Length: 261
Ligand code: TMP
Image (tube, rainbow, N blue to C red; front, side, top):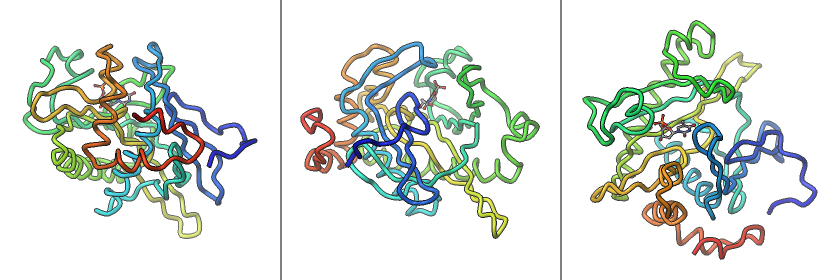
């Protein structure tokens, strides 16, 4: 339940808010319907998106935990919220590409949908005021955004996540074209160890998903490119993952179930 008189978010992002959690070292991650693109230049709302992304991200993070990828996810709380571990976010966005799309096509003049010899990993420095510039591994090491051994872990996890999620989405007749991940650190001071965990979200906001047969776009590109039908596309992704029935049947009083048709 969304608490009344809740404190102000400790972080208000474009698609999510973070509140202090009920237990030490936890946060409540709240998914909103607001959408932005092109570093906040385009703003809008995708009706029901927060509810769907909350469930999709919960489902994918849980599946990844099951194959041994540590994540920040603890448990679902309600239609729009999940309890997560408080991590120090590493200021590097990791993008993995299986097919050419988006900024890579623009930057390199490559046709959308072109196949790649092997998956491509890219890094971006997480700083909105700079427009999240693309960086290399040398920047990451030189500026201390990750230690070399942390970067190795992040790269290995990203390749594993790509293999696993590509298969999972293929089972839902969806191609995982590309996606963005964020990682964080949990510091265990007594043992003097640092654990790298997958954080943020995995959803149609942060993945490109194309229908396996028609290549129809089923993700935030519908919003970015003014294609329309974004709410329906997000619902269809949830339906194909077997999550829509559960989403529909779980009213929690806080969100209007009617928004999910
Ligand atoms: P790009 O082609 O625009 O660089 O995006 C690559 C992938 O990363 C795509 O699946 C969308 C996702 N992404 C985000 O989740 N957040 C962002 O801010 C950007 C630019 C991309």
